[in-house]
Length: 335
Image (tube, rainbow, N blue to C red; front, side, top):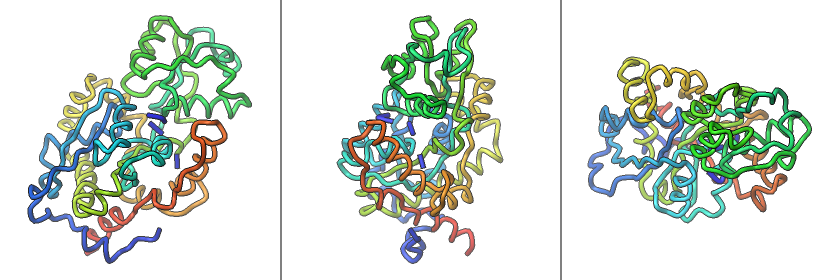
């Protein structure tokens, strides 16, 4: 992540033309869409589609590419090495200006509802106790953002702590080994952090509802050239949610294996993840005056990141969201 991170009227005729839930005539006629995903609870369900043939059932010709490091996935996508990627809104805003093929949000997978955490050593009980301490975070990424939100809410800034820039897995390991005083981490890495005796959660994304939506983002090039495949990909997500509801044990087995965690640990991570239904998506893509609306959240987040010096200027957000695929799926259900 240069941030894992916030928050038009549907062209219905076009949406209906590309929508349907039926497979495209010949998905193998083109190269597969290469979609990156990484170690986050809201993105593990994509492995279900791969294991259970849900991509094929929707006519989606997709090759999933797993990244152990989230930042590497965003860099690959921005460089044009992927057709799409799973990433947060604030991270998307960070990368969109420099993306080779453009970046467009087409789906919300989930909101972080406690799964991003700032974990501290024994004796750090308040934000004031954290001031001047060494905090390991993947610099500029989602939990760096969460740290900043917490500090800002208490009247402080990121400059009031000593940032130790480390990849999230390495950051959690450094904290567990006692080399830093605090760490920002997402699943499964905060499990490692909490192995340190006396460690505790100081605050989490649960304290900032809606601030960290997790998304499927695809290139503008793919939307222009293969909109039917983007639609098939979005349709697949809703089939994944249905599979998770109807086959919970199998779904958990697949996700736990992909994440490299136990079934018991998986349940902890699911508790901090709010998966987005169709209705949630329709609300998120709508204009509004709260973080429930991604267009609103994106403007607020861009201004915040500019103010913090994370990005030099706010990017053009006018083409960041394309709701036609979610709208078309909804329209197909009404037929």
